[in-house]
Length: 270
Image 1: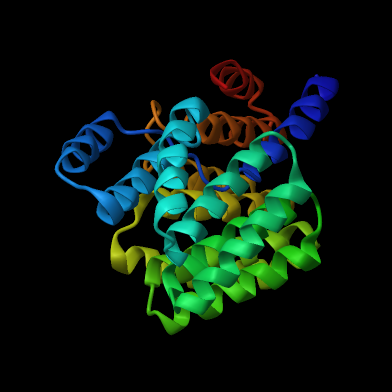
Image 2: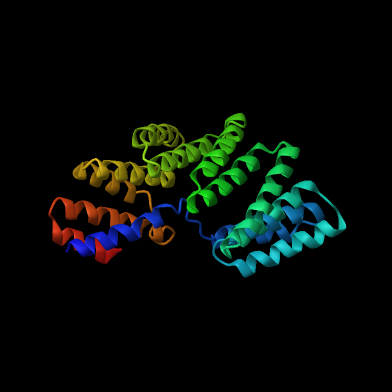
């Protein structure tokens, strides 16, 4: 039984590092396709970018089609923001192919272009994406650098959701580097904003992360309460990986309080 517990514990944390789970929404794509049919030139290029972003995490081939449309337009009429969007999207695809150096180069270039344009929102999300990649690679210093860059852009642009996302990520960095007290401060700051704006999905992520700290502090019943609250914000069809990791975390708590049947139940669910 101890072996099962150790093996399952080692398999969960990687899932928790996947900070965002995104799926293409058919309703969104259908709506964007209808709008696209009525647009030409620059406006259509912008819609192509939005459709590509909908597809990019679930159907790269479809995303590629719309990025190619953007590139064809850019070859005829240069617009700096279209160029930046293309580099950002190409960078995401390169990361999915594990071409990290190419991905970083493309997204840094995109960030620089967005900065020239004064687009604080895109600066924030692009820096956040680069930071997440560094986080997943275990380069926490660089992850922190880009999260701070992202936070600065979001704060300047009064983007509360973005600020809350970065607080959560800075909490994650502090957690994995052994600074649980600081992590908890960031998580609580994130929760304060998220509750105000009604962002349930990210609230669930933060609840899960607080549960990890409580688990390490051997406060297993309290950790389970946070995990159960986290489940309420996840949709099984859209957040399957996150729910799988959450069930794993819950199983570990049940192991610790000697409720073996419950622990095995949640392992089976995961």
